[in-house]
Image 1 (cartoon, rainbow, N blue to C red):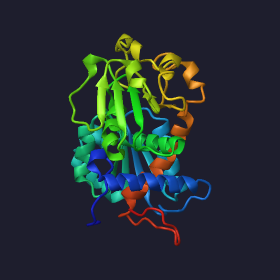
Image 2 (image 1 turned 120 degrees about the horizontal axis):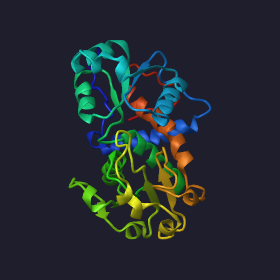
Image 3 (image 1 turned 30 degrees about the vertical axis):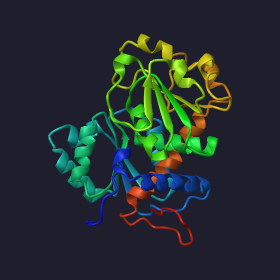
Length: 308
C-alpha cells in the first residue's frame, strides 16, 4: 500500500491554484495528442461509481482512461454494498486494494468526502449536489480555446444557484475572472466567493459579458419543482445582444430547449456546447493524470506530460 500523498479531486478550493492551472495546461497538451495518446495508465484501473444517470461523465472518463492505456470498472450504487449493510470505511478500504482510483457521481457530497478519508487511492468528484469541478475544468479549457485567455474576462451565469454555478464561483479567484450571477433572489446563498457578484437583473448581468453560461433549471432529483421563477433568466437573442459581439454561449448539458435557452441561441455561432462537451474528455485525462501520478503512472520518454 502506498505511503505517498493521495491526490483527491473533490473540490477546487482543496487544490492549490498553481496545481489547478497545471492540470488545465496538461489538458491542452493531452488534447494535442488526441490521435496519438500516450499510454500513461498502462496496468491501472479506475472504478466508476454512479447513483445518477450520466452521458458525458461516464463516456469521458471511460474513454479517457482507456485511450491512455488503463481499464475501467463501472458499477451503480445499488450494485455495491455501500448502499446496504457495509460501512463507507470498509468499502473504501476494499476498493483501495482492487483499483488505482475511484470516480464517483452521487448526490451526497458528504458521503464522497467520507469515502475519500478512508481510501489509499484517489477519489474524483464526478458530480455531487454541492459541486461539479470536473465540468468547470472542461469549461475553462473551452474558454481558453475560444477566447485565448480566462484572466480578466467577464463570465455571466443565469438561472439556478446549483452545483455547476458553485464550481464556477470557486474558479473565479483561481483564474482571476469576474463572475456575475443572475439568480432569483429566493435562491441566493451567502457564500464567501471572490470575484463573484450577484444580481436579479439578467440583462445587467449579460452587459458586455465575454462568456454566457446557463444550466438546466431542474437538476436530477428535483423533478417536479416549479420553474416559473427562472423565466426572466432564459438565455435568448435579446440577452445575448447585451454581451460582447464575440461572446460565447456555454451549457454543460443536458439541455431543455426552450426553457433555459432558446433554439436560436443554440444554433448561433456563439454556441460552443459541443466543443465544451468534447473537452470533458481532455480535462478528465489531465485530472486522472494528476490524481494517478502516485499510483505508478508511466510517462512516455521524451514527453513533458503530467508535470506538476
